[in-house]
Image 1: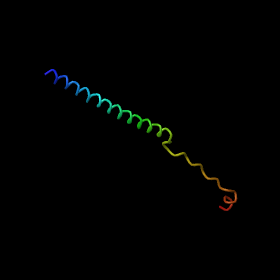
Image 2: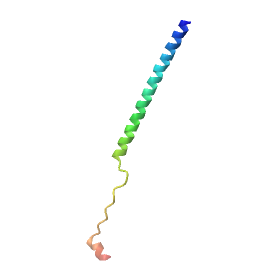
Image 3: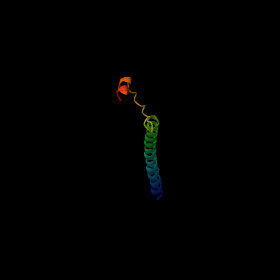
Length: 64
């Protein structure tokens, strides 16, 4: 009886450790992806820069 209890506890501990490792790996990958997404959002402007009006040459202005 005690052997089965000990075996069950060891099995539960083994599975728990592996679940913890997998969760930590997934958490690390998700936080890394979130960090990269935040960094790329800071690098790219959210709106395009305003365009400067084109300057017309004097000859063209005189023709119009």
